Amino acid sequence: MQICGIFIGLKGFETCVDKFCPLGTYCEERNIVSCGNPPCRPLLVCMPDNTKGCKSHPPCPAGKVCAEKLVPCIGRSCRKIAKCVLPGTCDAMECPPSHKCVMNPGPTCVKTILSAEDIARMNEQVH
Image (cartoon, rainbow, N blue to C red; front, side):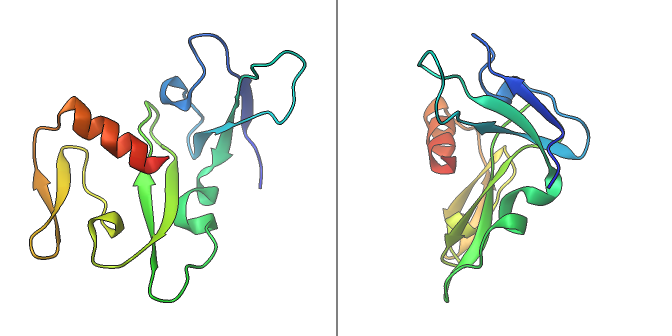
């Protein structure tokens, strides 16, 4: 694995949401284990695309599948969080940003106007 860049978070610029990384990489926040003056700011690291999501996730237990949830960012390639979930559920389905998943009777992406609460809930599910 090759790290393409490291940026130390600064005040007002501490998350990957506002960070551009080179083509073929995505931004990932890495917390410093120890630092001289807590609170410690995270390192923003540009990681190769082949290390994100299910590509680098360990195999899921029997009866579960690996599903990816996109973490919003301003770059072309955003981080994906991999989770083992039950197949045939909304957790196992990725909908476009303008859609949300509803069970009808199976998981279906439905176009909708998302409220601020919907977006906050989606961001909480990623972490």
